[in-house]
Length: 295
Image 1 (cartoon, helix red, strand yellow):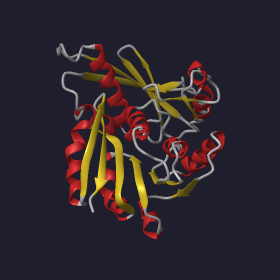
Image 2 (cartoon, rainbow, N blue to C red):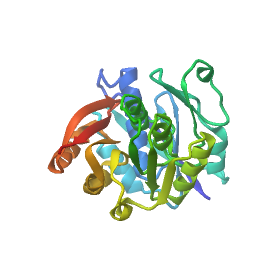
Image 3 (cartoon, rainbow, N blue to C red):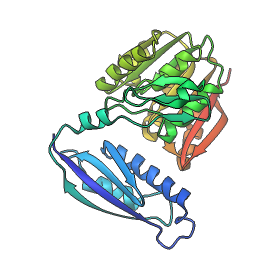
Image 4 (cartoon, one colour):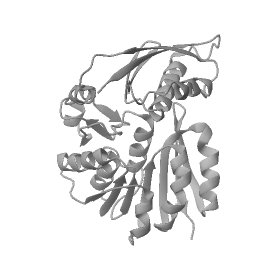
């Protein structure tokens, strides 16, 4: 499989605020999210530089140009160079490298099977994740915010739907927090298998995983108390009506995967479906919204 390496250089562009380390980190996180939507699979960060890897036959120069032209943080300049990389199984390389343990607000630690963490011995909630090319370790802001929110939600006895399950991390956390059962689905067959694998690693046996998209929901008779969706804005807008159809009375819908500036658009859509906003969380220009179904 042939890969390209794109090296993005971020500069403050004369904005004093943008030169702040926190703002620069936010800019790098946002850039990675936008490039991920454009087909990039993995990233490395060093200083003011982000290096992204993308399959050669997937690389879209116009999509990258659009990411830069529509970059939502003002005062940030972005330039990049691109080059071929050594021909090897990069997915295997990234999987074998794993990821550093991630602690979420003193509530849990998420780690892979390669790295161990002292947090696990200190009474933290323990989650093991093998990424296997799928999205969701807890390191990205969107996953972090939803996992954190699950700990603040009464999950005991709840029926949960995990839309676009990725690694299965949200399903696993829901189960360990007391959910009666979790139904999960993903359009990526690899993610379906990864979720099953990670459920096994965490001794979770009440998660049912399906391959497909929101059209699957039309054939499900179960009504869910909590619906989770960490997907991009356009898919959330397209699928929210389907989510609403399978929500129980006073069910909660927790959404992320989008930028802060998209929150109003998603909230308007939710309100049109008789959902009320009960919580909004932001982290480095990424956003999470929590809604409740009205009677």
